[in-house]
Image (tube, one colour):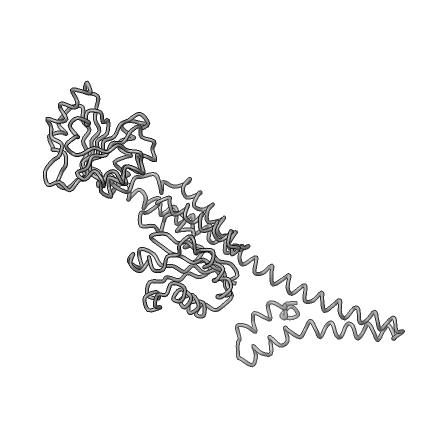
Length: 424
């Protein structure tokens, strides 16, 4: 029994390839059942996100055969040539596979180091495999252990404590200045990807009110729907900016949108209640002189990049601690797997011996019932039982000797304690 983790991710393939190998939620159950039926997998789970698709499964086949089977199945299932798939795949086996799954769940293999979303996606993959009936003893235990490791890493390290995106850093700065954001009003200028991320982070932090200003109102309206925001034009900024406690701007304008005079008027209307401002744009959206005003906290993209760089360094240090935890836990899990294999072997061997004993004993009882000489019956029973128990070890020793397999001969000597007389 071997554990495999096979995948494609943002490190090995562009999105144009990743999207071809992705599994949609609607087809995941069918895919899992095909893996069990067509590939003779004992257990299986599939993780499919925008950045990675990974197959986790238990197989008895040799590694080279498994590679051929999986590559062929992916080619057939997704109708994508093997020549496109093969160069992008990575393969992990047994402890490497366990280690990889735990690293993925902890965010150690993510595009953004330590990001927490991947754990929820792995939990979803686990639930889908359970529903499909492809989750059994080993995978069940592995996923539960993986979730436990991710929780331990989050608890014992600072892997997720620091902002490592400009959008997240901007919102974190706002929280440091205002404490809770529930009563604050925010004006977002622009409707690009960065502002959209800022809006999402603010929404998740239950900010009081969000207003989005953009040159194209329809674009801003699409984004605003998801966060319950109001929408205004750029021309309406002067009449609304005085209501904002937080102003975050990121547009493609070649000239500043917000000048010192506009903010002076806004502060007067606010009775000099402070405004927190973040200018993420290059060139600047907010005049540099605005930062000279006493009641304004102005940060630029360079300020945020410095914070992000420091936080990334903090996460890297936390990641080193996390790797130690993952290594220890994967060792423990593989010890459990080895124990499981040993236990299965012991149970099977004992069962085999007991069945043969019972067969020979039943035959001996029949002979006694037919008045056969008891001594002869006992001698025959002892001889047949001894021959049966000796058969497999004797054959293994003979085959090893014929093949010149010295290591196996030494191992069999140890297993059957053949040097006991010599040691005495």
